Length: 351
Image (tube, rainbow, N blue to C red; front, side, top):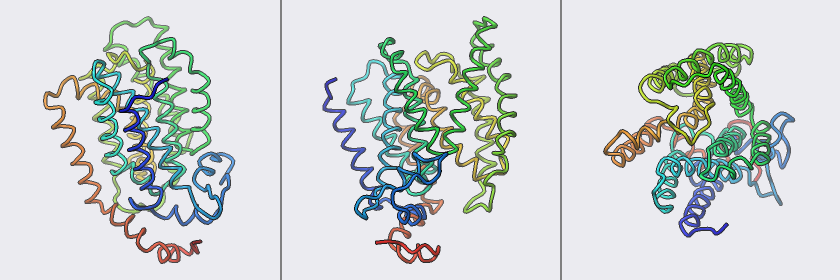
């Protein structure tokens, strides 16, 4: 396959941003101390891929944060490029790559994605592989090509499952969404509105069962560092669930599999059920953004006349919120006082 010039621009741009994150110029945090001390290791058997990527050290040079940035930004780039290409069918490749670069760059510098490139490294690895896995579900123009990538899907599924517990949770939700899709198919329902409602009704018991069985309601629910925003994210998920089901028609998106509806519905309900566990709501919300992205992009480009103004305003707004949250101050101050910060946490940093 011949690489187009605009694809080269996109790759070089993402590689440059990954490099800036990798060497800490764009910020780093406590994980740099922790993983930088380990040397290359698998961390733990259940998350050995995320652990290996996060701790990779060669000749006393630590490459973990660079690995994390490359995996996450590559996953996001592939995913959003396929989404834009599917929604904006007749657009030029340069335009698609420009939108992809701006979207991924904005996400990488804003909450919650910024957290996982500068900290939470294993989840960032899992998030990157989940983005790649979702991109493989998007139907290609060449449907035969879409059907032939089963081996690649399995490999990415495997990498995501053993990167972090949060990415494994999303894959379990994905399996449940396939079951719901099969159940709906048995009823031979053709009405879009009925399909959306049936999917939601079936998603509720699956979500409740998985949420309580997994212990996500209380697991890792320690003291909140920063703002207790779980309740706000849960309320946002509730509004999106209502909005997508009764105002827009996600079934109109022929380029995504049918199970994508129940996929975002199950995670929506999970977030609604755990509002007071900010730690886990924040972890899951990053994946939630990926799951609602196909429907959001389709809606924006189909219904909002001033699309570019809206996207620009949205980018400035979320970057502004991230700045107000002092997230940049924390990561950049850590970057300037690396040795002192690691000593503060009683982690003797290795030069």
